[in-house]
Every structure is written in structure tokens, then in C-alpha cells.
Image 1: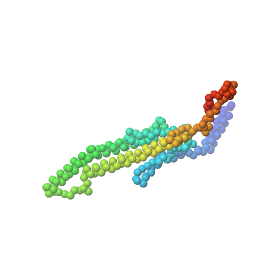
Image 2 (image 1 turned 120 degrees about the horizontal axis):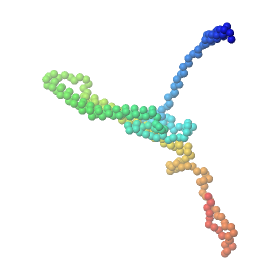
Image 3 (image 1 turned 60 degrees about the horizontal axis):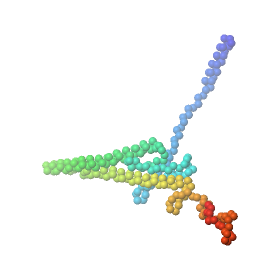
Image 4 (image 1 turned 30 degrees about the vertical axis):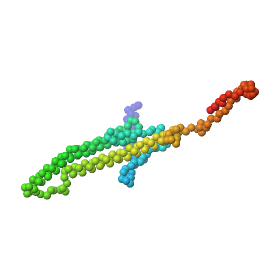
Length: 249
């Protein structure tokens, strides 16, 4: 290849590259939109009864067998040391569930500690403060410098007692709410166990026991049939001897 051919080839390549860059149109940047998952419905639905109490009903469970990936697993009801009920459906326990239970237990323990401090620490201190206020007011009246007490006249002890009672009512309502949840969880376990037994082919008898249903042929009463002997006769009567009845099942 001559020098002129090399130059012509290089010139042609530069021209092709320039044409390609000129005709290039970058594609617009497409950002993938995040796929937001819809929030699943809650496991329990809260109801306010006419008498003011709270009750819960199951929203999702027991699920039909068509929605299950494998065999039906019976959940178990657990209660933490702080009294928080929950329904364990699998092992190991999900991390989010553990964190939620830990936070609920810590919040309740903090409120219980606050109630104890209000009753055992703040209440005696408030009584001492009220006694000091009454002593100062008595001395001022003796000296003729008495003045009306500012505020609504509520004592320190009454204010602390009001806060302690409100906190106690809140803890009591929370405890009743957890009891209602526990009853709903127990109902879910019973329904799941009943569904599992029905899917296994069991039936509930009149006595409440679950038994496996037998085919109709297996429940019939066996018939007693006699099998005559072969070649044996009774010498006195000339009739064939008969053996005891043989029960054939």
C-alpha cells in the first residue's frame, strides 16, 4: 500500500467518524420509577363495642388453602415479658417484629417507671411543698402581709395525683387492649387448627373429638358364615359334622 492510499484511508475513517458523531442522538435518560408496594391490610380489625370496650376480629386469617404455598402451618400465640401479645407464624422471627415488640415493651416500661416515680417520689415532695406553702401563708397572715393565693388554688399534691391517675388509666386501657388482641389471636389459632383438620380429612364427632372418616364399606357389621367340613359325617345321624362358626371379615 502506497503512502497516498494510507492517507486516503485515514481521511475516509476520520470522515466516517465525524459523520457518525454528527448523526448520533443520545436516548433520553429514563429513570426507573420506584415500585411502591401497597400496604398490606392489618391482621386484626379494631371494633368499639356499645358498652365502650374494645374487641378485634381477624382480617386475613385463616386463609383458604388455594392461597397457601405449602402445607398449612398453625401459628402460636406468645406474650412478651412486658405483656405485649403477638402471633408467631414462622421461625426465625422477623427482625421487624422483634424491633416493634422491643419498642412497645420499652415504651410501656418507661410509662410504668414514670407512674411509680409520680406516686413514690413526686407525691411526697408535692405534699412537702404544700405544707411549706401553708406555713408561709400562715406567717404572712400573722404579720398582716397576707395576700390571695395565685392560680386556681390547686395544690401540688392534687396536680401530681391527677397526672398519676391519668397515666394509670392509660396503662389500664392499654392492658385491656392487649387482652382483646390476645383473645383474637387465640380465635385465629383455633380457626387455623380447624381448617388444618378439615383439610386432612378429619371430621368432628358428636363428642367433640376429631376422627378420620372411614369408608362406608369399612363401617358395616361383619357377617357370620359357617364353613361346612369336607368329608366328615356324623355316625349317629348320618349327617355331616359341622365345625364352629368362622367369622370372615
